[in-house]
Amino acid sequence: MKIYKIAVIPGDGTGPEVIREGIKVLDAAAAKHGFKLEKTFFDYGGERYLKTGKTVEDKDIADLKKYAAIFLGAIGHPDVKPGILETGVLLKLRFALDQYINLRPVKLYNEKFCPLKDKTPADIDFVVVRENSEGLYKGMGEFRDQGTPNEVATQVSYNTRRGVERCLRYAFEFTRRRNKARKLTLCGKTNVLTYAWDLWQRTFNEIAKEYPDVKTDYAHVDATTMWFVKNPEWFDVIVTDNMFGDIITDLGAMIQGGMGIAAGGNINPHGVSMFEPIGGSSPKYTGKNVINPLAAICAGGMMLENLGEPKAAKMVEEAVIGLVKTKINSLAAGQMGYFTSQVGDLVVEALT
Ligand code: IPM
Ligand code: MN
Image (tube, rainbow, N blue to C red; front, side, top):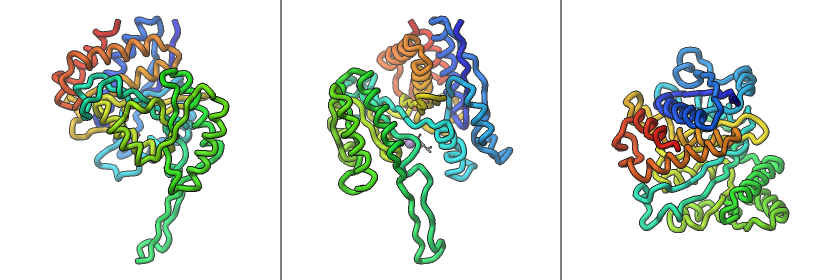
């Protein structure tokens, strides 16, 4: 039997609760398709940081490279100063494992959960390919004259030809493989950020010539947020930089029904990828068995696809769709009509 070694990082807050349901569903789907997930748990996150002062270190990264994939719950702790865990755990993992793509599908499963008037599942089904290793997230910048009235803080958007090109190539390949509208939209800000987006646009236009079967389009990021609300049906695949991708995918999550259902994959096409629900650690709901585990379950489904088990991945997605179409009252924590663990059970029951 095929066995995949998976690193599991439940993390903080509601992370462990949603990961538990994710694993429940993944194990059940694996059993139905004749493979197994061998799981090793890692305690990276806020609790461990408070106890040991440690985030994720280089030797931890070396360890994680031995796994076929990483399944991550949530990182964030109310007692840890903002920035430490984000940089030391989440971004450290993404950067050190060179997960240069953040793949975020935006798909509405039930119009009842869409905040947009008159939009149906046929209208909201696109994928954001977010560059995940550069841009404003690079951490480049400085303070000058800190603490004085003349203080200046700069934060540099770092874009390399190589980094931009590998992201765009992934997006073109992905659009072709997805084979839906075969349309790729570059989302940027060429009218103001004239260095970074000139590089993106030039590279985009060059690569586009190699993909005559993919239609291309461009939208400024501000307009993109407008179209998400007004005409989400215009989009098939969107490619953008790290910061814009972060922002537009929160809006994307809302139009697909909220953080309870939004999943993403941090992809290194040649290395170890990491799958996570987009929502945070939700301290308010921690330990109450009320958080929605569907985002984690969907992230787990993406992981199966990435491992090379597309049939099992599809089975998980279809079970989630069935549940979201019929039984679930709401995708919001505490309002689902079921406890967290029951939602996991229902998805398992619906696996066929
Ligand atoms: C996300 C999150 C992270 C990001 C934070 C927690 C560092 O918002 O995954 O979208 O900005 O990428
Ligand atoms: Mn975000």
